[in-house]
View 1 (tube, rainbow, N blue to C red):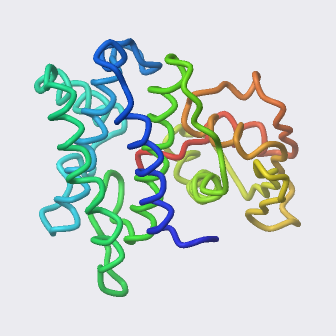
View 2: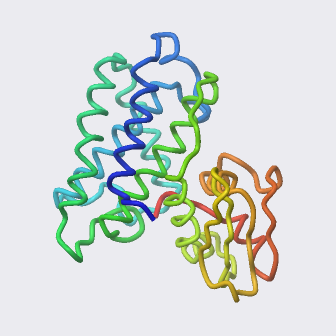
Length: 244
C-alpha cells in the first residue's frame, strides 16, 4: 500500500478544500450524522484529533478502555459542550491539530504503541483510523450538501483496517467468527486482496461499499457485496473500521 502518513495528509487536504468553500448556511446544515450539523461533525473531528495528539504526546487517550457505546456518548457530550464555535475559528482549530498529525505519527520511534480506545495502536494503525474517521465524516458533510467527494486509492487503507479488525468486531458483537478472505474492487478497477485465499469464507465486491458498511453508513443488504461460507455474512454484519 502507499504511505499511510502521506495519504492521511492527502485526506485532510481533500476535506480542507471542501470545508474552506462552505457558506455559513452550509456550516449550520444538518449532516448525515444524526443530530449533528456540519459544524458539529467538524467539531467532533477536531476533538478526536486533539485526543490523538494527546496520545502522541504520551498523555493517553481519554476514552482508552471504554466500551464503544460509552465512547459514543462521550463524543456526543463533548460536541454538545463546545457547540457554537464560529466556523472560521473552528476551521482554524481543526487545521492546526489535523495537519500536525501525519508527521507527528511518522516521527514516532520504531515499535511505539499509542493509547487508543480498546488497545494501544502502532503509529501507522492510528493514522489509518484517523483516515477512516475523516473519510466517513467527510461524507456526512458532503452527501447532504450534494458536494462531490470522490473515492480513490486511499480507500485501500480503510478496507485493510476493516478486514484486519474482523476478529475484534466478532468479539465486540459476541458472535463466533473465523478467517474471511476479501477480494474487493478498487475505484479504478484494481483488485485488492486481504487474508488467506484458502479461507472457507469470502467477501467480494466494490471496496467503496465494503468501506461504507464498515463505517456503518450503508447496510450490507443495500450493497452488491457477496458473502459466502460459514463466517462471510456474519463478517459483513459486524464489519467496522472505527473505535479500535
